[in-house]
Image (cartoon, rainbow, N blue to C red; front, side, top):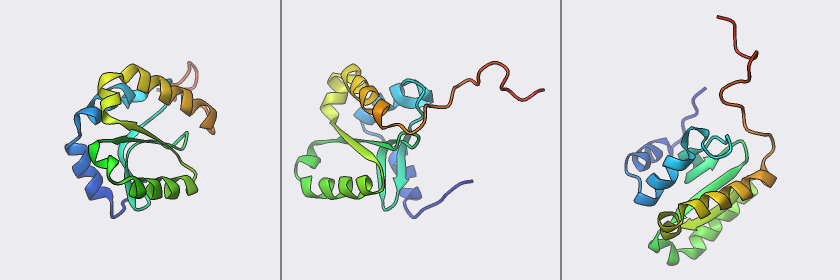
Length: 133
């Protein structure tokens, strides 16, 4: 089932024009590369489009550029709304991603484990759980 929101076109535009930090992080999160967790990029949630989301663990990752130093109140309000919806929001500066991607990934991995509801879906499926051909 595909859920379309009013934010879907914006999310598509953002996916087509990622920042350098978003591209670098996405290369390391996509295809369940981080401990088997599935992440989505530029994912619509309510009235927002978040940079990355692991719906299984209810984790949102936001990458902040220099403009976020000026909009701290807006970012705090956004985090508050997402938190009220049950998401844990983790923010990283773009520079942190660009200069220390391994440290960022380790922080995400450490954060996701205690906040996950269910373990990630095994990929590929374990032997014997595939449909017969």
